[in-house]
Length: 210
Ligand SMILES: [Zn+2]
Image (cartoon, rainbow, N blue to C red; front, side):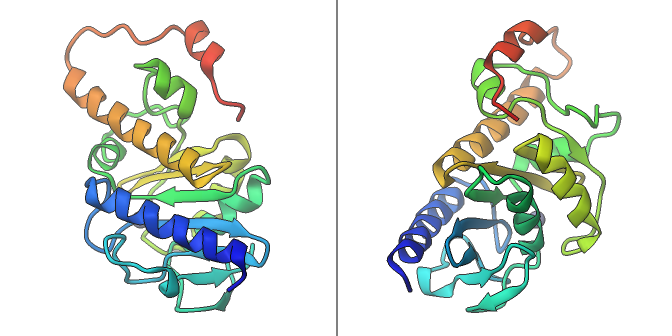
């Protein structure tokens, strides 16, 4: 493994452990990818982010085609689609985090922007959050939609499923994912109470670039 690939693999394992031990995903759910010179390193199918190790990772190309290593996650095509759409992005994190997944099951959501900008850090790290319609896990019918959405947004929420978040680095993607989950939690804590979200102007002044 090239030094760059090894570093990326180590980063993925560190991130996986962090996501898992902090309860941001559970069981064998969730997957993480990082773009390298030789392709996209991604967690393999059937793996737990709590136990995956660097030698377990799969390598796919930017079309999602398996190049080497174990069989990739069946959601790897989503990572490839988002990275294709966003040349500035280097990492993608997808989880089934509790509160984000809970929001994704609600009816009557604004599909262009699921959550209000409740806090400055949400406005800064996530911005607008589109909702993609339900597809069964691994259904590649979601590929074109995810790619088209990722051209405009680095974060999206899959209906009845969970968030997909890209970042220029893995750390940035994780920060955004975590902020999304905390805001989804706040959204439920505040449900039914009168709320003052940031104004459009306040949110726009903090918005990430795309
Ligand atoms: Zn999933």
